[in-house]
Length: 339
Image 1: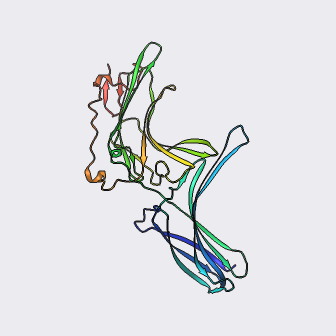
Image 2: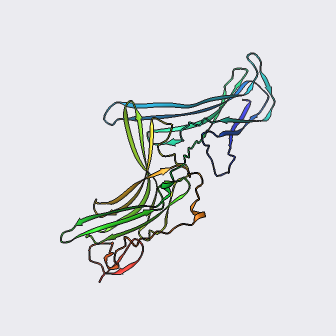
Image 3: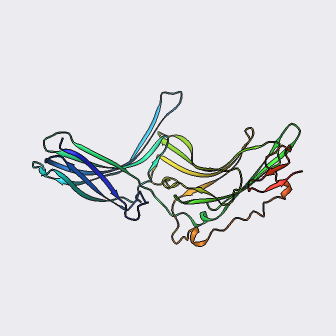
C-alpha cells in the first residue's frame, strides 16, 4: 500500500492550554501525507462535521427512543485533478494547511450518558486506480462561553437545619454555607466556606461540596434525565476558603443551540448523618464566560467570608453528637470542651 500515514493536526492560536474552538472562530490545521511510493491521486478532501444524538431504552419495555440533529456539514478540496485526470504524488511527505470558519450558532461539545454533541474533521484520499480509499479523522471540541450576568459573581448564602430524635434525646444539626459566586467559569475555582454544628444524638459521617450536572434528553415527546457529580471536595473540618474546582471543558448552562439535550448545574453541600437523614443545601450554578470588563479575583483581591452573623456561642458547637464525649470539633477546626 502506497500510503504509510495520513495525519491531521489542529492549531490553536491563543495559547497552548486552550484546546477548543469557540463558535465563529476559524479552525486551522495541518495535514501530513506520508507515501511509501508514488501514487496517482484523483482527489483529497477535508470534511468538517458536527451533530448531536440521543438514545435510551425504557426499562421493562422493548422500546428505544432516539433523536439526531446536524449542525455542521462542510467540505474543502485539498487536491482535485479533475473528472478524468489524476495527479501523481511523489514518494515522501506532503504537507497541506487548511482553515475553516465555524458558524456562530454551534452548540458546545457535550458527552452524557444518553447522548452527546460531537465534532470531527475527516480527510478522504481517493486514489486513481480505485484501490482502498484512505480516511483519517480527528475530533475537535467546540465550547460556547456566553458572558454571565454580573450578579452571578457575588457571594451566595445557604442555611438549613434539621431536628433529629434519639431514644432519650432530641437535638438539631445546623448548616451554614457561603460560596464566592454562582458563576462557574471552567478552569477556575469557587471558594466554599461553611459551618456545621451538631447537638443531635446522631453523628456526622461525611461532609462534601460538589458540582452536579443535570442533563435532560429529548426524543419523540419523551424525556430522560441523569444527574452526575462532575467534581467534589470532601473534608471533615476547616471549610475556610476551600477551593472547589470547575472542570475546564464543561459545556455552557442550557447547551444553547441544541434542542434535544438540556444541561443544568448545581452546587451542593451535603452533611451525611448516621441513618438516612442527610442535611443538604443546593443552589444553581451558571457555566459560561466572564462579562465584558470583569476583573478576576487575583486582580481585585479575594474578600474573606465573615461568619459572625451566623456563628453560635462556643459552648453550643458540638458536632459529633450523642453527648457521650467530652470534646467535640466544629467544621472550622476549633475545639471546645463540653464538660
